Length: 446
Ligand SMILES: Nc1nc2c(ncn2[C@@H]2O[C@H](COP(=O)(O)OP(=O)(O)OP(=O)(O)O)[C@@H](O)[C@H]2O)c(=O)[nH]1
Ligand SMILES: [Mg+2]
Image 1 (cartoon, helix red, strand yellow):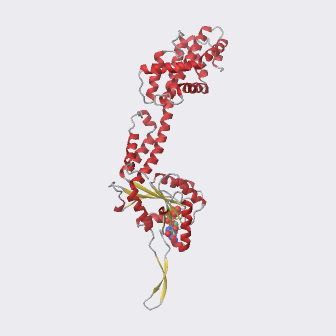
Image 2: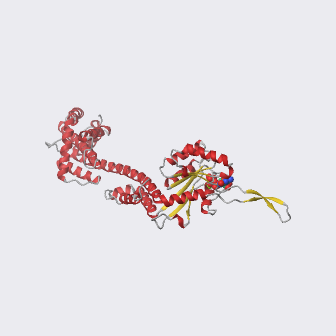
Image 3: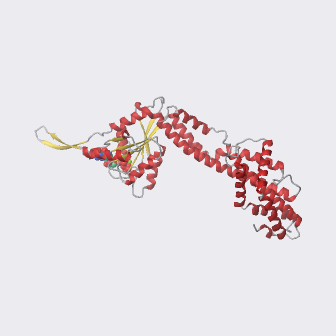
């Protein structure tokens, strides 16, 4: 079981998640839904709202059970199955439910549509959804479980939150049958339900037939309504709330937070990748075009120094990190050096040179610039994506190391057909500059 201060710790992590300064305003918009959910979870935690949901097969007496707990007919009850069609909630009002240390706490009882209705999958999902939001789940059965009920119970158990089995309608069983059934439940569920979490009740027992003596001495048979037998459940619930109320809240908040932060992490990852993609592509084209149009002896494969350093600084911003120009320059050097060792650019230079010269007869000078531009663009692209790996690893090369990151960037270039797209863009820029002299054919071919 969780320590008492788990509640405080959960609250602190939720607050931290919501105020994470590394989430940029633009990212905040992209993950607004997740943040909203985290806010709701935090609010619920701070208000000390405990939600108890009943789930079970249709007509097992879920609505009756809640009415019996409340002592009033709040939820609609009917012998015919499928009575509860929507998730409904009501506050369980009694002083005794206040959680120790949480003055304003309240307990909310949640009724759900029954499982196992013909064509009722959608309603069943609503019930599971309500269980996901609840802090404690009561699974209601009224006889031995069918396979379907057992499967549903396992699914609820997998949620990882406290669970109780409520054996309802015990008035319909003889004492011995009742004992046998209880043994069956304990045997089947013993692995994940402690015996005290299996309770027996009669939420809405059948009336008694009694013999009434009339004033004239004769007797008459009459039906008498019987009060519900709900004490075992009420007691267990109040015990749990008193002893573990705050823990119940913390467990559920933690579970929900896990979901939220996981989605948040994934969405943020995707968002940053998309942003990085745009940034890298624009620098790739700019750098390639500058070199292609003005081929000069270069410092190295990656072309313009200040442009590529700017790319790295720009990428650091995308990943919510800060990097000095000096550091960016070192990083650039490391990546270009590593890329040089792979010799892919040299191969690319050779191959493209031949292809371009063949396709653009008489335009050798242009082709030379193109080839150099192509290689520069290619290197810029690798530089950018290798740096993405670096920033995603919080500014380290991680366990895989720089070579692996560069290799992955090379792979990305191949997979996205980078050289073909780049050549198309460069030829387009050339044709606008030199007129229609460069044949379209040059833009095709690998
Ligand atoms: N004999 C007996 N009947 C009960 C008991 N509890 C509920 N019932 C009856 O079972 C029938 C169904 O009860 P509901 O409370 O509507 O059952 P539910 O699980 O909410 O049903 P759905 O909302 O349709 O899924 C009603 O006729 C109730 O009177 C009980 O403890 N003993
Ligand atoms: Mg109902």
